[in-house]
Image 1 (tube, one colour):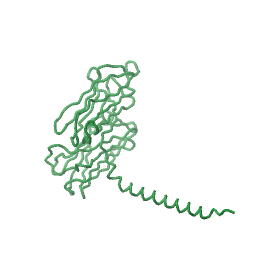
Image 2: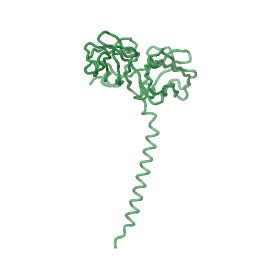
Image 3: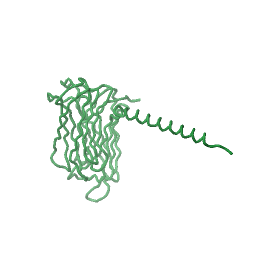
Length: 277
């Protein structure tokens, strides 16, 4: 008669080792997650502007990637012409993003065509190189009559608003972000919680800093959320609800970070990570 007990014991020991190895790996990844969780791109929705001649029924998307010298891609879908109630067909529309590239303000513009309410828009390559810095100061899509109908933000519920936070060029502030780590910010689209994460900051200790988020809800007057925070051991962190509710359409105008002297040292943007191939 065959005895299966030694095999069962071996299997039990093997499974135990696998389980412990998996747990150890999970703990290792858990410990590593704060270092790798930082965002490098901007990802947001394109939301409607109240009273515009074209209506965005389903939020579009915008992504600004730090790779290949800086890539900006927009997608629009379900853009309705209120006159017909159907997807808009329109030539000579324009997407425009206000940026500051290495301290120089400029507006990036790209024409596009709406076909049955949809469009995919790829901006020309920016031909930038690591570690060039691109501050993002606004995005708007305009119809053929140059009337804005969409802007950057989020809808609740929907996709989160998320981005890297970068150093402001020429700031008088002594606070410096790490050159090899990305700070980040998020506005969740389920509960409307704003977060800001900064780490490996120099100097490692600084009190009475603050972050400002300027945003508009449902086409209303822009409001400014402000939260004070300290930097300790090179880390600064903010997590606060913005009071958003289901159905809110939120335009994000700016996110800026200031030191105790009210000098702006960090802002919404992208640090280029790789040049064009």
